Length: 238
Image (cartoon, rainbow, N blue to C red; front, side, top):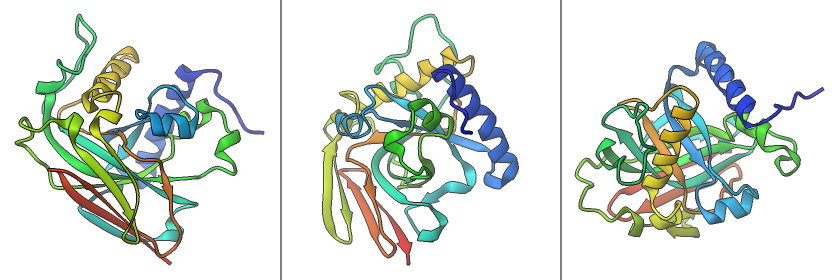
């Protein structure tokens, strides 16, 4: 019988235990985090009105572009994201983290594809807690060139678009992520502190998708472009 976590706290406890096992099983150390359901389009699609988080492992991070057999995944999907690398730790503080207080904690910004995997018979009928315990669909990511001189950019106004087989399938902008991408980073920082840990310098954080998840077929190639941050691609071979 399937075990269902009793609530979100237990779901994140199980996620942490699972991630330790995945590291030992060969995925490598955890090098970052993903925040899901930060845009209205994704909250509406998933019918989840708040952010959720998962972990990213060293062996699943790719640079600029990746080409993989589609059968590495149960049902592969892609998302169009803004990602950051942290310049410093975000330890417990007297006040909760905010969009403005995390600003100086960001070393670089980049475009990213989150590769997700529908590992479930029917995720529509699956409870949120079980999906969170399983890292909320996270499978891999493709990171763009790291932009260290990002401070002049208005991240809320950055436009992004996703193409599958050269046809645009979705678009959005940074403000779609909780009104500003750094709101998602602040949420994650506060979430980690509440759980007795914290974000660390050098980690990467995927801040959420600007477009609805696109489920792909064998042979499909996805490209995402973000203004001022560049493009990345992921191809899944038949």
